[in-house]
Length: 137
Image 1 (tube, one colour):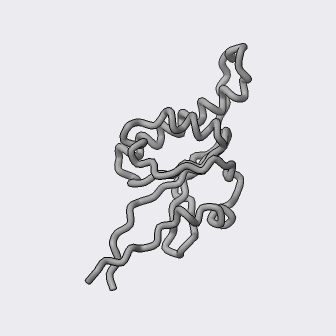
Image 2 (image 1 turned 180 degrees about the horizontal axis):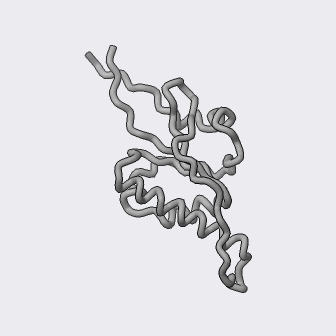
């Protein structure tokens, strides 16, 4: 029995302050962090008085995440992308994706799982675990 090569799947797990990229491991249903993206650093700039300054920082962080995903897409680091983040962060990341990165987007989960460890996260992402496809002989 032979198996087809599965596309490289990246799952961005983020909230407005922290983010990481996880990918399925060889063990079914298990995800591991492959790219820790750290915690946002809140820049010191005059806030728009009509908006919550904390919200501005979160959207800026989401935009920076998208730029990183754009760069990695251009480098061919992943073939498929899933975004997992609260709704406003999910929207901000999606809006800032390049055409290349957006074309690789295969799913989105509007949930805040950023504080979960990889083991606990796996239980929520089983639908995105790609089982090896069998190639006919």
